[in-house]
Length: 508
Image (cartoon, rainbow, N blue to C red; front, side, top):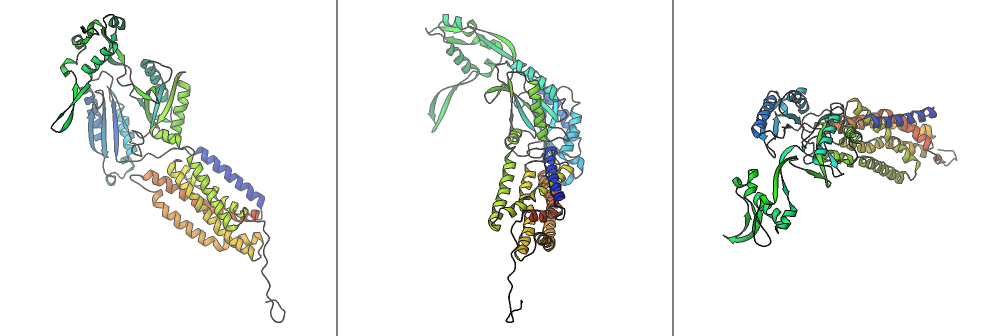
């Protein structure tokens, strides 16, 4: 390398280009999906489905789950918020009893998901829970289609269905679905405001009466048994369970007369959403899903955003929530942390050597470690996630450690009069064994992380694989370039050792 410096510099430039290329091809994500020992199964029935019909479909899903050898107990909850929805909590057997690859959570999801597609009458699909509890409701993304132009719920539903149809054709996405529906049967009370004014009935009195009868209204408080009790008005259930119950309601006019509500308003059936969600102040439809096998969450997010730009017309927007939102938000923080790590190493070494040039050579060894970490991660099919980026930050110190050992001894050799090239080669010869020993010790210490299994294994593998790849590249490749960097950056003349003369005047 020292003898053919131009070739060495060219190889270094190619290594930098290769590292940049690896950054582009290694798929990015936020946190890896983990096998947490249980699954969620969602059951979405048509809007008019009864609770009994929902339960029958859920029973079929339970039978499919119990048919998988890795499955343990299953809890079934039908009609939680709405009678046409259900959720199943499926606990897998302990990890020791499902060591085979087919017993993993992702294999169980793939197996049961294929079988649940054949269930007629509803949409049933398994979901992996989020890797970080509280960061979203499912393992995957939460995407909101926002109505920003005052569109009706029916128009929002039509656009959402159109978007879902396009999303299910994208190879990067899987399990894309939405519970938003604007086709639920509802009762619409059409108040004749002009007639109410003629009969001296304030409009506010009409709505307050409806609130009291069909909702509830707190009127006063009283003290009894040493406690304060609320007095709440509300109709009995049998008086508010049919549309003709509106005929039994009277409101009081301003002049004291009681007016039947049926003379002021008409009742009709309409279609509308059972629950209208608002996100960032806009009516919105929630879309959930995840990345398909072989794709990262970053690629899934990019696919959803491209689809939104293609499918959503003017007046509609989109926004992220949960884990996907955090991934978008934390997109550039790893780069900042890595840059600060490099800057810290550079400044500490500049203070140690009292020079600006030699610390630069130490920092130039870091890209080899980064390239090695990315290469091994790519070869093993892993992703550039938060845990991998933690390992990258550690590479700054680990790669600099090997370069510092060579630079320190090379600088010492220069102080005793050696030429730069000879000082660098001798430094490598002196420190090769300590570099290899310490690097191998660290690599073997990370092997259990890189080969981890069980709960949390994917995050451990992300860190361990990146560190092992970076240390291998730093030890094998960077050690060949560090002496070249020393020779290129050393501009300080060698200090000759003082000559000591004996009593005879001859040099000793």
